[in-house]
Image (tube, helix red, strand yellow):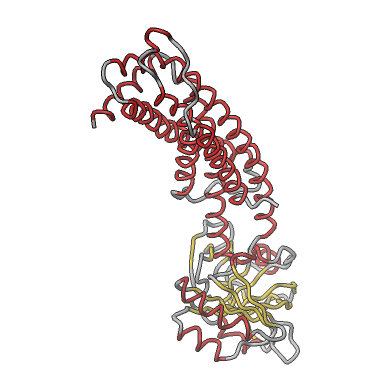
Length: 418
């Protein structure tokens, strides 16, 4: 406790004297450079994960060109996985009043769709919309705005095959709309129980039958392991990893570029930290020799100075993390054309990355020069001579180089470099 108290007092003294300015700035810049990229990547990844769940309406999506057999549903329920069904196909929809027709994408959904995310509907054209879950009531349909404007107004009747549906609301957002970028036709949502009444689904009809699944991660993983070897012709499994690959690829490239800049900053900061630590050591040799004359042990002197720099590293890492959090806001603004501004808050991982970077630089490039303090002689007070290098100093610097190399490889792997 006494050494810790002395280390804190020396930290305050050296900071007021300007002894630690270069070293602290180098540490803050290194941590800020790396954590700014980490914060952005973490928030984007969380946003993509959330959006991906919404795009497929669950955690997994099974798509087939034929209705799924009942044993798939039974297995999912046995594992505790919730199921929502949907079917989509292209067809002509006409206004019941005047007969004007429009090519649309009809999507029939079950009462619990979607399992992840929500639909957005408005009570009438140009009205404020709100979130909702579930299918339209039997006998009604939710057309998209452009379809409703093209055919009839709110409350009009729409003829879909042999059935007539009342347009009871306006569909403003269906989360899985982003899966098919080439779906140019407007969408019409109906209840899946009304699908047989339309008479549109016949043998040979091009219908995409989907099962949306959601549940606990372990249960979903078990179901995925069960279904994958059983997929047959015309059946495929989609997960959140395959949602919006174009956005994920673009952000991966930006993350790699920013990660390269961050790595360069960390390497330069390591050099600056090492030089600043060596300069600090040379300026404090006389003081350490006086402490030795007053009875201080070499291990105590080393512990005091090491404690000082560990405290400095922790404070610099905290400040660097806060600076990185501010910088990622600027990066987010620069990428506003491809990244939404309502991303989730960052997790604890970028903060841990920043602390790891700061302490790696301290342990690898500050503590090795301090090992020379163990060899400071009391005779330096009289002769001011430089003692020989501390045995094991080369190994200590080798440890620092190894830690830096490990840090580089860790960051490279974290940003998925090719």
